[in-house]
Length: 406
Image (cartoon, rainbow, N blue to C red; front, side, top):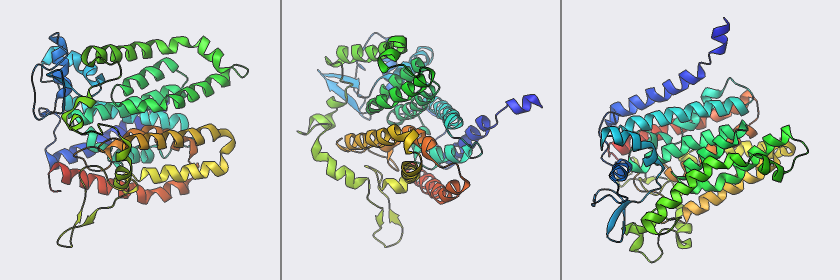
């Protein structure tokens, strides 16, 4: 009896449900995890490193490669190649990228459960909210395989959840280290460092009511050791490749070197903001709607969890102001800054279904939702239509996109 009480089935059931949905999608699309990965830039990079070379040695025309001083480099932040190094050492270019993507996805779901159980108050709705996050947001589109564009985003998502969980638990070394790893997948999540520091400060303050932020820093300086080593590795790698400690390589993609405005520019902002609110349009025959498969669509339709978070924020603003005021200000400000930076990028992502770039916000929105949501049954009931809408549109749209029906 005691053993059964200790066993928490949520950590088993939720990953199984997600994997079952993945199996169904794979059955319709052929995206089985044992297939080779044609877009394996990170593996090629890891293999090159093992051969003592920073560039790839030749051009791979179907991959997005940076061209710098007549050499070809992977144009994305490097952390996924760190993960793939031991696999490349054993398997060469045939690393199990898709299996790794599925494992990373399951690990993220487990940490979402852990974060929910730490912050969520009532425990009976954990399946609803975690499955809302994973199945009704478009996240599955980027976690189903190990394509270069997607595996980094998948890793960033999981690492962000891990970072938030350990911050809430007061384990700053783990939190900041996993955040640094996430930055090495998707650099824009660097914006959320103030939130992590606030969470760590809040937890430390409970144990040290008269302490100051400087005292926390002086006592917990060792939290930054792993983070500093990881950051230093990025800077050294960037400098050795591109002569600039902050340059990952994306600025040297032909797509951006051929335009005067480059990768980021304010002139992109207005158009990209319009993309994030545009609806699918009527087809030529007046029948089926035409969905966009690049640059995103109406954020509230593709990721209805944003509506849930906004409503929870409004509720907390009315009823939880005193205890949640810093987070009520900080999270929206950081999220808005993140969206503005995204929209200053030349594109909102190429081939996709949904709003792929906005997925990077979701771990932090999920954390905020756990803080702000009312502990009532009516809140879950109110959100069920959004949950079913998100599942239906994303699963059908993802299957249609991977099968090139749209």
